[in-house]
Length: 144
Image (cartoon, rainbow, N blue to C red; front, side, top):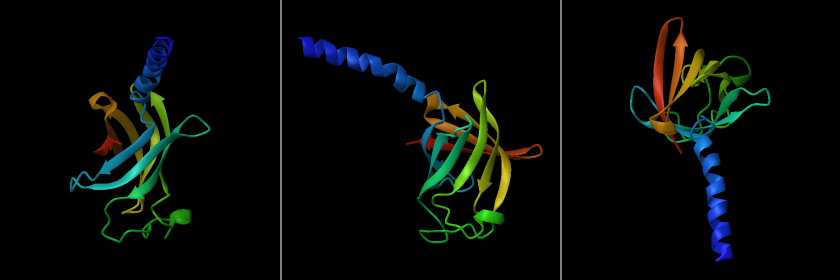
């Protein structure tokens, strides 16, 4: 009986941690291309040492450039580097229910955009928007 009570208390103690994980974009996300609807990669979003959020490609699911594509069109340090392992989101700051003021890199085009994140569907989906001036496009990613 004592072990059963301890197990119940332990599980109840875990509930707030599980709920708070759904209130944050931190975790692994399957990226879905907004033009084709196909899953492209898995991005892991973590908190940087300065408190902002960043996202790194940890797996390539689909690519027209083979299983290990590189960022051919990128400039600077990312030029011709493997996309797997590349940080493609950075600088996102919490602002109410969204995370904004960040940057997203589109490795296919080699361009960077202003970015923001918004949790959707109870935290099971993530709206990731990239913007140039007033034009924005949103991809909806799925929590893994």
